[in-house]
Amino acid sequence: MTTPFRNSDISVLPVMKIYDWFDGPYPARVRIALAEKGLLDRVEFISVNLWTGEHKKPEFLAINYSGTLPVLELDDGTLIAECTAITQYLDVLDDSPTLTGQTAKEKGLIHMMTKRAEIEFLDAVSVYFHHATPGLGADVELYQNPEWGNRMRDKAIRGMHYFNGVLEQQPFVAGDAFSMADIAVLGGMIFASLVKLAVPDECAALRAWHARMQERPSVREWRTMVANNTPRA
Ligand SMILES: N[C@@H](CCC(=O)N[C@@H](CS)C(=O)NCC(=O)O)C(=O)O
Image (cartoon, rainbow, N blue to C red; front, side):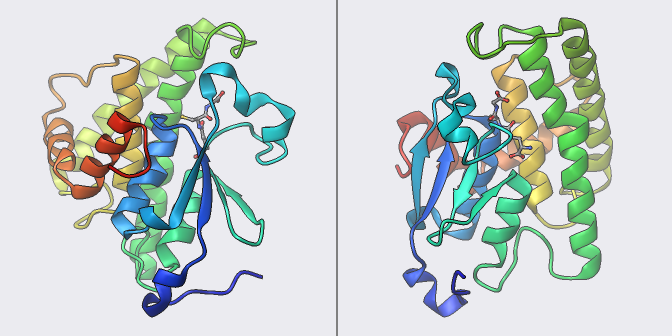
């Protein structure tokens, strides 16, 4: 069993390992969450090269059955995959959740909007990338279905319109405060930008939110990490 850590002893938290790839959109979600929680110094990043298909090799499949990044490894060897699950774990380490909600209502709304960000936007961009573009290259993309990929591109654009409508009504994706749901939509924006999927001009609220997000210290820190390909600037 891993010892639970409290606010006061966060500095003695054992170093956690994160298997990821420095500029991956899903890894970005966990890196931004780590920056939000002030935990970047407590993490050792282990690079798994997506472009050479390291994530599909038996060694990595033994770490994460689904062959995707990121994965968190605790000091007792426990492996936690899925960005949402990792973020939830990190958020309660200090007994002061800031990303996943405090009340039942906040937790429910944040969970819902995070799931929607994945289903309606981020995962759709990902399917577009893997199926309707060269993706990670012929050696990694062993099965492609361009028609499905293009459908998912259209779904992602629809998702942008959905989140635009949400952000016309409220400042953040799940309500009045920044949360894991904003990070999930940011993941979608990061992936969309990588595959050159433009946000429609009429999505003014989504664009304005995105511009605001660029000013957040955690997002700036993530950008610096990507630019340097190093855990810390
Ligand atoms: N549902 C997973 C998805 C993770 C995911 O798709 N990660 C990307 C990294 S950007 C990946 O590993 N893609 C490689 C592939 O699908 O071949 C999560 O939320 O962590």
